[in-house]
Length: 176
Image (cartoon, rainbow, N blue to C red; front, side):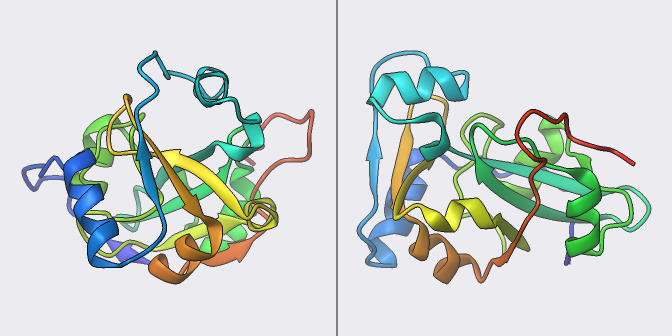
């Protein structure tokens, strides 16, 4: 896991930085700007005509006691199970990071965090369901963009751990 100080001034990145990252790493990924609000997974899926499970959410979790953070990536229609996440991440008590922490650690504002191209190296855990998708859509650096990317590129570029971290359908994410 990676320790981060949230007292550092945030360095805000965005779609331009992400596009540069894509070019530098020569992957077949693309930024999409549907031109409509995408504040939710449902809105993002409707904006591009995709299923909700094809929309990825990249959520930053941290542990207050250790100061350690990690990025969890799951299908948009899934809920992260904090007990499962703790078991595979070695974060004793993972909690969702604040907006300020998300910006300081990833370089992106919540709602636009991509699965790749972060401000600094970051531990990443990808839910096993994501790997069943050949191509998915993640945050594109801001709420106005989505990133179309092959899931294998996410795994390769981030060095992610693949594990089951989502609650079964119909269950609310467990916290204990």
